[in-house]
Image 1 (spheres, rainbow, N blue to C red):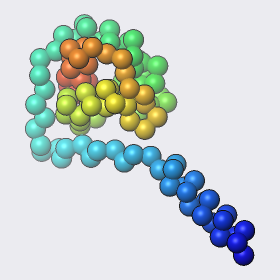
Image 2 (image 1 turned 90 degrees about the horizontal axis):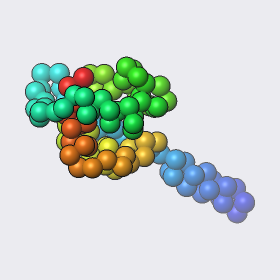
Image 3 (image 1 turned 90 degrees about the vertical axis):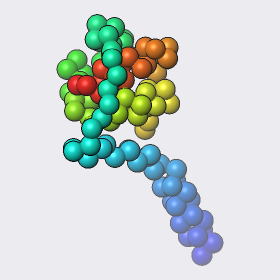
Image 4 (image 1 turned 180 degrees about the vertical axis):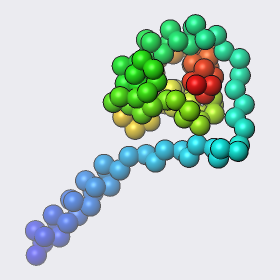
Length: 108
């Protein structure tokens, strides 16, 4: 009996550890997102260096989700870039580079 309880507890803890973070809900379609100015050439270069492998050359997704019309505000994108989310690791970008990329991505 103790063996079954131990197995049940182990299964519970393994299941609890494998839970991924729930994504933040993007804003409703009628909600306006404020996007700051950005340098598109620099943002595309940052995207090529840091994002293209997982999100595709047209932002269509691949091993990572599509970034087209993602509905996230630039501040949310900056947070994801800085801290990572789910399987995505944090990105090593300077603050201004991260802000520029986030504004560009929010505008796609």
